[in-house]
Figure: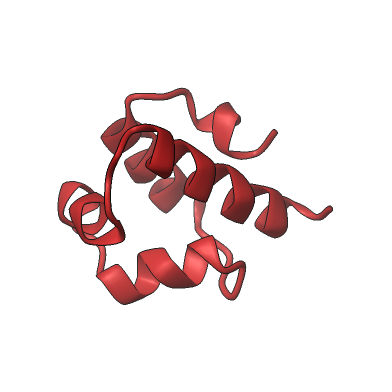
Length: 67
């Protein structure tokens, strides 16, 4: 599994664990819902900056998204 795929799987799992919709996560990160969905489907690679924004919004360490 490459990092893009690992991030997609982990992001979806953690977002569900926190009972957040893609729309809610997008609002918390100031990203578009479409972009968040693309990350979750592994269609795009998130930058380090976006990785940090998502981790902050989820209240987790960024490394948890890449495990």
